[in-house]
Structure formats: C-alpha cells, structure tokens
Length: 578
Image 1 (tube, rainbow, N blue to C red):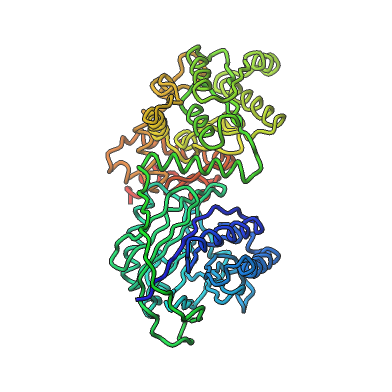
Image 2: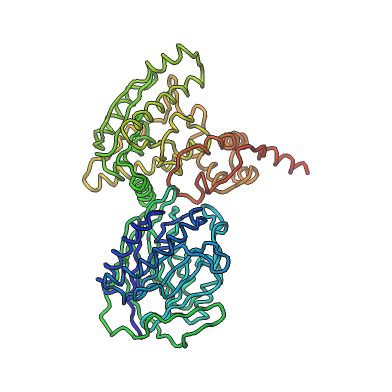
C-alpha cells in the first residue's frame, strides 16, 4: 500500500498582506520539506488571509491574489522544493462570469497544476460568502505519488452530500480539506465528530487543516485533524498556535485512469510511489479544558489585533473591579506587562479598597500604573452644566473615557474597553464612557464567565508556582460601578447567574417569552431583562470589536434593527388572545 507523508501547516496569516502571507507559506513549506513531507496543506485563503469580506469584490485584489499564487509556485520551486505538492487557499475568479471564487490551488514543479472552487458558501452567523463568491461545481482529484487526493474547502465538509460524496464516488484515497473555521466554545468536539462522520461517508481518511490566529472579531484555533475512515484520530494539532502537523499515512493506490468524469476533474501531479520508509509516531495534542481554551482564544485574539493593527501597547482604566482586572491580566498575557499601562481614575465615590485593589493588580501583573483623580474635572463640569441623577453618574464615566482616550491619543496606545457581554446586553455600559476603546476583550464574555476565567487564571498561576495576577478581594467583592454611595450592580439587576441564564436563552438561543416562562423563569423578570436588551441595541451597534467565543456574539452574529417596535410580551399576549 502506498505511503504518503502529509504535513498540515496551521499558520497565522493577515488579511491583505499577500507578500507576508506568501513569505510565510514558503517558510512553512521549507519546514515541511525538511520533515520529508510529500504533500503540504495550508488553510483556506491563506494567500490573502481569511475572511477577506468585500475585498474579494475588487478586481485589483483578485488579480493580486492570482498573481501571488503563480509567484508562490515559482518561488517554492526556486527554493528547491518543487517536487513537494502544496495545496493552498486563495481568491480566484469564475472563468465565465468573472465573479470571485474561494479556491484552492495545487502547486507542483513551479506551476499551478490544479484548481478547486468551494462548492458550499456559508450564509449564516459571521459568514456572508454567498453574497461575495460564486460556488464551484467540480471536484478536483489530484494524483500525488500514486494516491488520488480529493480537495475540499471548509463548508464543503459541513454540508451533506456534495464534495464528500463525490470523493467517495471518485474513489479518492484521501480527502484534504483546507479550513478557516472560527473558534467557538466547545466547537472542537463538534468538529471532530463531523470529520469522523465525513471520513466514513467519503470512504477514506480526511486531513483537516485549520487556520490559527485572530482577525478582527474572529479567532481561529488550529486544532487540525487527521481522521481515519473508521473514525480513529490519527493526528491532532495544538490549539491557538502555529504548528506543522505531520502524519504518515498508508493509502490505497490510485486505480482509475486520469481523465474527465461528470463534475470530477482529475490531474496527475506524480505517479511514482514513495519508496517504503519507517513512519514516525504522530504527536496527538489533547484539546485544552473548557475555561483554559476560552482564555487562550481571548489572549490570541487580543495579541493579533494589537500586532496586526500596528500597535505596540495598550492602556486600560483599572477600577479595582473584576472586569478591568481580568482585561489587564489578559493584556499582560497577550503582549507582555511591559506594554500595558493601567490608569486608576477614582471619583468622589470610589472606595479606598477599590483603589488599593487596582494598585495591587498592577503590582502583581507588573504593568505601569498611574492614578488621576477625576473629581476636580467632574466638579468643574457640574459647575457649568448642572446634571443630576443618572446623568451625573454617566458624566463620571464619560470623564474617565475622555481621560483614557486622551492619554491613548498622546502616547500611541490602543485603549481596551472593559465591559462584558452581560453589561452590553442590558445596556449597563456608558456610551463614550466605560465603553470607549478600540478593542473589547470581554465583549462576548458573560459576567459569570468573567469570574470563572479570573479564578482559573489565578489557579493556573499558583499551579506553576507564580503569584496569581488578580487580587482575591477583587474576585470576591460584590460588583459595583461606584458612581453613587454604596452602589452595587444588584441594586438594579438580578444576580448574575440568573441574568446570564436568561440572556443565554434570549440572545444566543433566540427564545421568545413563552419559551423562557416554560423554562421556569419569572415572567416579570423576563419582561424587564428583555426590555433592557431590546432598548440597548443602539448602544451595542457603536461598541468596539472583541473576540467571538460563543455561538452567537454581539455584532455580525446577531443582526437586529435599531428602530424596532417588536415586543415579546405584547406578541405573546396577542398570540394567546387568538
């Protein structure tokens, strides 16, 4: 039975940086060749970065992508690796309509010897590929060292039939799937089950390579897989870091004559079988535990957002509360404490223990710490414009926002917003105040998970013999905005475990009022929370980007009108009356 050494390069590319991406692909091809690989797989649209969104609608961008792939093929050969077969994603165009297509190229001997266009274009959640790309019709089967390798791209694997069934019909010995599959909590289990099921349907092993890195609000977690036809995991890559995942496979020798069949395009790259060799033992990486992988996803998303957008440092308003403490800890993990500046901005209502906790956080984490009292600025404003009540409370937050953004502007920092998903959901984040920032690490993190992450991070540090970064007092004390005397969040909100359970049903589950009442939630509480969520849509629309970790994050995942008179309670009453 023929042998084939397959290398999956889960790499971190940058959208629009075609030269940088091509250079990275060349370097990882060199590494794969050094490891003796015969076939190297790179992620979906690795040449252009993923997702390219409406860049694909520009003819100049598509032309640059086409040229980059041709140049890449030639440069790999010039590097001395022309005998290695490389499969890489890029953006091409449909030969008939000229519309863009999400494609894979097969490179060999300095040339593009095969091309495959993605069949299934996702049009849900964060994806809008159906609007941008034109789907392909044909399956590409490339004969590599005497083995027929079918090619597919990401969503092609998630849909029943299509390229998976075609690979079986074509008698493929291996199905190579290149992916840009974003991270979601617990998605690794779903992917593994899917790949195992599709391997059985395809009648051959599947090599599934996934991208890694952050792109705006998306995080790609790697976790590349090789799964046998019977569902056995033959190899598994690490999460949240670049890696070359190398697997030796025994595959059936191709038996069909090269040529065209209906919707199947066959190309011969190399017929000669690989001389027998001793296979290496694969290194199977176990997925990270639940909270640990959420932490890793946020850190990677934050690191890449800072790095890819040209920032070197971040500034955070540290209040002594749990949200800003976790954001500061995440920032230190992502870019190093030497690149983090924490600013304490106490008002006349700020407690001494909050000031102490903020200073203790800075000492534990090791970032630069400053303090600027905002009371004189607030007093000066109120002497000119006499605000009271909530307006006065929000003024304090807005003075803080102006101060932190002024320092960021002067010193070149990226401001990190510290609001969490629970606050964003119910509108408990002052617009142009504590919501200011260029990136929001906790945007998709509910308050209960903020506590879980903080406790996990401290426990992880303690297990390594390091000082826990977050003061215990910060974790244990009741959360408060400290905008009026003795204020706590639970003055106007239910306990966060109850709030987050309702929000999970309403925001992520799209449940209606009747569904939530049937689940046992109090009707008056549901009405109150749903009203807060609906009224805060206009504020969320103006909020900074942040890493997606859930099935449905605020932003592109959840698209609701701002001007909207639909009310769940009224709708249920009308339905009940009828």
